[in-house]
Length: 354
Ligand SMILES: *[C@@H]1O[C@H](CO)[C@@H](O)[C@H](O)[C@H]1NC(C)=O
Ligand SMILES: [Ca+2]
Image (tube, rainbow, N blue to C red):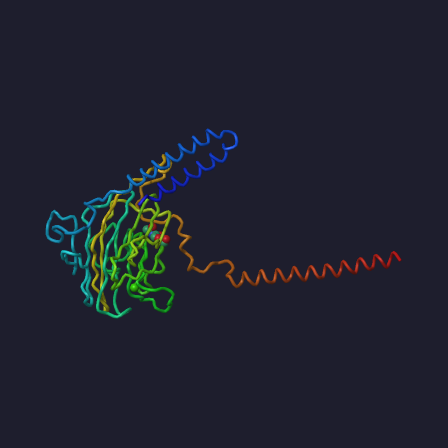
């Protein structure tokens, strides 16, 4: 997969080539063909470059079969917690039993600036639809190995949480279908509201029918140049579907990768099959290097884009509609009155003449 950065560079180069060729066509036909050839060759090699410098799997940050030493060896790069256990095929965070919590946490702080995390997971159980819960979460946070109410991890966390929520707690509004995958960026004081499925702190998300699925379920999180992209591949099509795309995300380095899950009255097996972390090679302009300041607390630059739910001070849609309606009606009335007055005035003028 060509990275989006390489793609946009390619698009820019191609449009440049196109403009260039159009511009010179009339005057210097030969030169144009030369340019086109050069441009074509350059864009070809750029595309090859894009493929080549794509991404590198970082084993030290990845959780892959056969999970060597996981949970008991001191040389393992991961720790288990709670009910989590390892089998040859997966790391089971919780079994399909009530009131369990389990997690797996990386021991090594993630120091990369641009990365992509690909997660393969499986959620399955005996419960009928919506009689199962609660889901699982993938983390990149300051703290690790904590118990708590957010899918088995602490609340008021600092860092990134990706939630695969399989139970609709906030079922007053039947406006979304579960399982639902969502993104939250915690800053240490923000609170995940379990009863509302975290709606007030959600930065983006989508429905992903990832329970008792016959297909392999994947999602990927890409973080590059302060842009966070979440994509899913859950319906066996083997292609990525965009789920969330958030710009202006500031995430500190040195945080820990983890996965956690919890069951309550309702339960499921929550399995992690793999977590593969890739380093992305990304070119930065000197300006971008300068702008890439060291971040201490996670934040999103343009929070306004997420406050759609908050009632605005200004006009609502209905108010706006009536304002426009009355303005239009007013103008029509004014126009009619104006015509009548003008007609009278003309008539008076004519009367005066004769
Ligand atoms: C975290 O974010 C919230 C909402 O944007 C803000 O009110 C709060 O001050 C932030 N906390 C920190 C420690 O930055
Ligand atoms: Ca929920």
